[in-house]
Image (cartoon, rainbow, N blue to C red; front, side, top):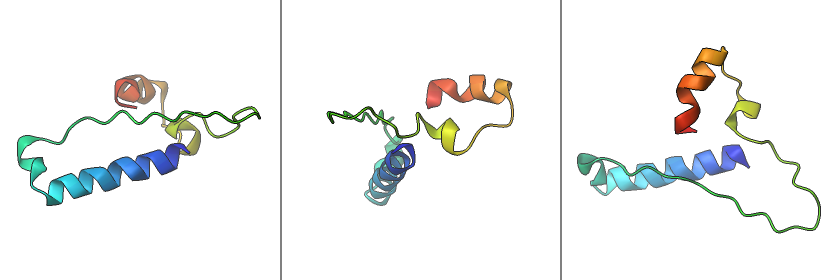
Length: 66
């Protein structure tokens, strides 16, 4: 799910850039997933689960942007 949300955000940013919004600066996007299933959520917790960062310093530096 984390990768899918990243893809959706990238597609949105690409559309906004093509529409000329990039000249004013692209907006920040906070994707939120609401799960309402009966079973416990088992998907990856975030992008770090899909592509781990090389060091804890890199994780700390990028944490506010994830």
